[in-house]
Image: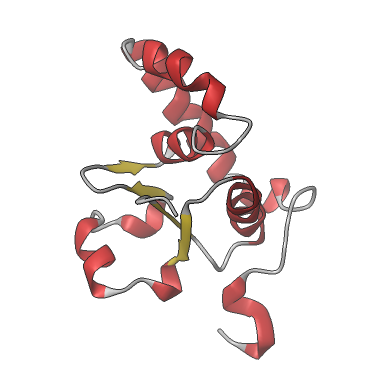
Length: 127
């Protein structure tokens, strides 16, 4: 098991689809906002519900960087690690990555029509 945890909005079908995609292809621990424990919550930014986060032993990656990093933990993303490290040297890349993340996140309802799963927070009559 990895020492990293992907934290996501478990009340969002699109987010759940992505969390399951990453879960099936990596050994990351996957935790929804509704299941955060105090230790993990303490490591997240105050506005943690504004995007996803990847928490490792030493770092917290948020928003676009969290998904980018999580994907490098997957079977299909591991080979891209050197490329990701290279691109992270450039501010233009970081701006592009975060703008792209925000564009997708702000349109989750549209993307959810194509890629969605029932979120854990809405299963079994909970929420």
